[in-house]
Image (cartoon, rainbow, N blue to C red; front, side):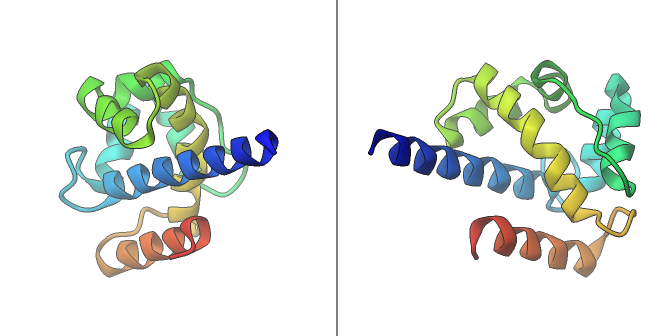
Length: 131
């Protein structure tokens, strides 16, 4: 029974992290939407990894420390609070979720904009959150 509860908690936490990525990807977000997020990653030395998420092929990994550095402490504190994790736990978890989410948002190898981005975010929500 405890195993089921742990799996449900992990799924709920993952859902909250996916929601955080969707918030960041929205135009006008504090990081400047999906393109701003990718630019932040690039400016922090993670351009190769970010481009691997956008392009077709394997997603290169990043560390929780790298994600925290790219997003900043304020963003990570907010993500941690929404997900019920500590900031280091949320950073490590985002390092797992972010590459997959960006990959799904850019499944044709390009960063979508406007209504195309809205459609991709809605698809991500449906795929991962059942909405």
